[in-house]
View 1 (cartoon, rainbow, N blue to C red):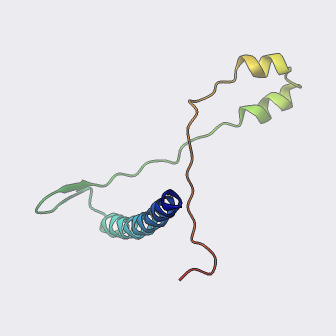
View 2 (cartoon, rainbow, N blue to C red):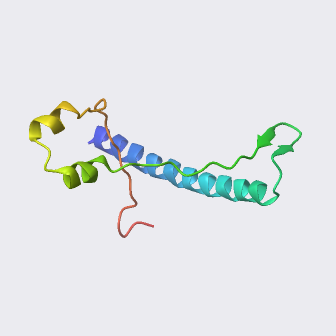
Length: 100
């Protein structure tokens, strides 16, 4: 029972950290938006320097759609050109319904 309580505490702590991160990320976006709005390319602070640059959006080619328009690709062709990343764990946290 004690380990179950400790695991529950870990889950609650993780939720609190995620809430803090969300607040910090929102503040980070506000600050970046303010810096971009100045129109300056470089802005000096007492402790840091910010560089603002404009980047075109990333181009993404839908090769699967192109292959289908050119003809039905074989399963062997798809398999030969498919790569997979390393496996990883995902931990998602959400507030419990009815909690305060």
